[in-house]
Amino acid sequence: MFDVNHPATTLLFILIPLAVTFVGQRLFLHLINADADLYILGHNVHHLFVGAAMAIPAAFILAFQPETALLRLGALAALGSGSSMVLDELIYLIATDGTNTSYLKPISLWSAIIMQGLAAGLLLLIYALS
Image: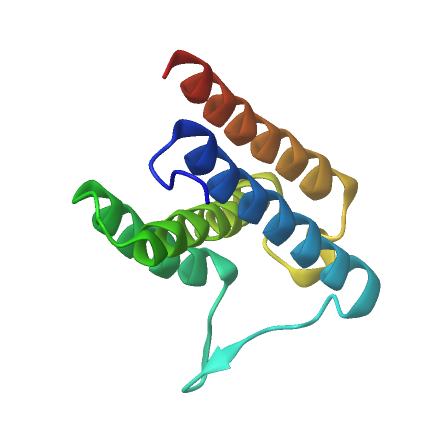
């Protein structure tokens, strides 16, 4: 078994969901359905909101250092995945006009790749310093 409190575990359980979420979302939207909007009760729910709804509770859970391994690992994974969604949507809203078509433009993709890379770099730096 591995140590759920080891910095390498923390790094991997955030970094892998961050990368998988980003790549999965972008592949789905670029290759399968660029107009895949989620509507709940008539409101368009962007992945910024879903990501924030995942990352904020996960960060709160981690702030209290849960002793249950499954809770800690789940919160780390939710933090990585939710952070990926927030970063991707933020850069999309900053770099484009906010339409589904502009989500597919190179400026949106490359800006998001840079943001995800900066997030991964920050995680690696924090890991190296721990």
